Each structure stands twice: as structure tokens, then as C-alpha cells.
Length: 370
Ligand SMILES: *Cc1c(COP(=O)(O)O)cnc(C)c1O
Image 1 (cartoon, helix red, strand yellow):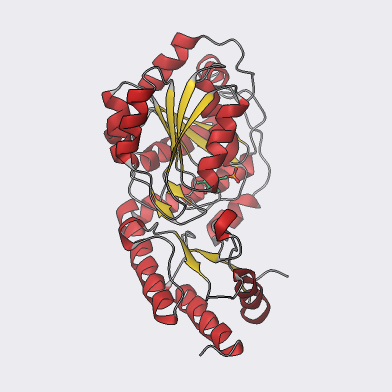
Image 2: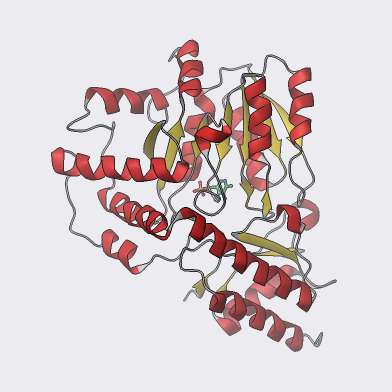
């Protein structure tokens, strides 16, 4: 049995998304399907706010990160990676796995990355091939200043990759205007789809950097050049290298359609209001949010447990007694100290937030703290 999902992805599926998942299976090629595929790409372009190329890689969000990072690196290249949480560490791991010399531009967990630190890192590593950062660091609920970091990257003409897996559709983002070269997201977070797809947007500067490097040693499946080649050479019939999971794509199309129909600005405003409601409720109950207001992510909130109470107990209690599935979390010094509430489902409403707060109040009563 699982409770109401309020974790930082996956999110519950809306009715129209679930219906798309259950639609009769269709072939993944031919004019009728290609037209659906292309429409989905156009909707995603609107969500990324880009005129660049969009590919729907088949794999979880990390597949998209793997493809993006490897496309801009050769063994021995320096990569500047923002690390202020678990997912920043993952970006560094991916870059290292491709033989890069990773320079971590770090901040405390719970604090945002500092744009200035990238300026310094570029002064010290003028030949860096790429900058990689998370937009929302989902492990701590911190929103990173990617727009400012991108400005610095652009000024030094170093390509920048943004992991917007938990942020696209949840917080303001404009790929082209901000000067982002590659942006990666995933189907199962703010876009409201099922897990398994990694939309990746690639801008012209990224292509220029990729072409300069050639195509040797980049593998095949998670190689952006493979995806572009098929998009061009098999444009009308089969513009991707593999069998596409057509139902998952139909479902993603529904999710992105719903976002655009509601309006990105409206959706983001709704998340923001609800995040504020959750944060003030948490503070009122004595659960201090990890991130300060100024850089709190609007779609996931991490908060400290009560002194001396392992946060795992809160997670267990909310599921067992209130049917609410939130997430634990915390590595290193945060281990079992924080819990995380995901509020990135497009369907998120006041009632969900209030139910979490009521359950937390009940938890305090049970342990005799209220
Ligand atoms: C969820 C998440 C990931 C991992 O995505 P998968 O789909 O599990 O591969 C990476 N980065 C961020 C910021 C995330 O929130």
C-alpha cells in the first residue's frame, strides 16, 4: 500500500495523463506518429522557452544528464561543477565517469551556489570545457542562481549545462534568454508525466562546441549527435534511433499541454503560494526549513526534524497514520535530520499542504511535544 505521493518525484498522474498511458499501443514510426512526436517537441520547446533542438531521450532524467555532459567533454578536460547537494554530486560523478578533471564549485548543503565562485573558478581554470549546475537542488530544496551563473559562463564563452529535472515547469526558466546551452529535464517531476523520459534541449553554441570536438569516443545511444542525425535523415518516418515508448510520450504530451494550457506563469504562481503556505506552517510547528526564504525552491521543501527526533520517524508516521508519503533525506551531517515534502505535482492544492501540516502537528502530539 502506498499513501498519497508527496515526494520530490515521481508525481501522481492526472486523469488525462493516465488515460494516455492506457491508450491502445501505436507504432512509433510513420507520418501519424511522427506528427504526434513533433507536436510534443514543440510543446517542450515552449516549456524550455527555446528555439533550440529538443530530443526526448528514453531513460530517466540521469540519461539526459549523461548525454549532455558527455557531449561536451573529452577525457582530461576540466569541468566546473556546482555541488551543493546530492544531485550536484551526481553531476560531478557523471563528468568523472567520462574522464573529466572535475573542479567542484561547492556551497554548503542548504545554501545556494554562489555565482561569483564560478567567476573565480574560471579565472583559475581558463581552459574549462563546460560548467554544469542543478537549477533546483532537490536534496535540499534550494534554488540555485543559474541565470547569474549562465551570465558568467557566457562572458567566458564556456558552455553551460543546467539540470532542470526538478525545476522545469515549476519555477521561472528561459533557456535562450538566459544563455543556457543544454538543458535537461525529466518526465516525472513538474511536467506531470510518468517516469522514463528525459527531454533535452540543445542550443546552437552547444552544437558548435560538440562539432569542434568530433564524434569519436561518445558512444551511440546517449550521444546527442546520434539523435540529431536520425532527426535529420529520417525526418518524416522515424526521426529517432530507437523504438520510442509511444504511450509514455502521449502521457508526457498531456502533461506539457496541461502546463501550457494553465499557463506557465500561473502554474508557477500557484506553486509559490503553496510553498509559502507550507513554509510558514512548518515554522509555526517548529520544523525549521533548511533553505532560507530567499532561495527556497517552490516545488520541494526540506525541513529539520525536532531536536533529537530522527526524521525517519516523521516519514514513517505520516505514511502509517495519515497515508501521506513524504521523503526522508539527508546525507552526511544531515542524515536523518531533515525530511522533504514534494509539492511539484501539477495537481497540488491547499488541501495537500494542510494535510501534511495537520499530520505533522499530530506527530508532535504523539511524541508529547505539543
Ligand atoms: C530527480 C532528479 C534527478 C534524477 O532524475 P532520475 O529521473 O532519477 O534520473 C537528477 N537531478 C535532479 C535535480 C533531480 O531532482
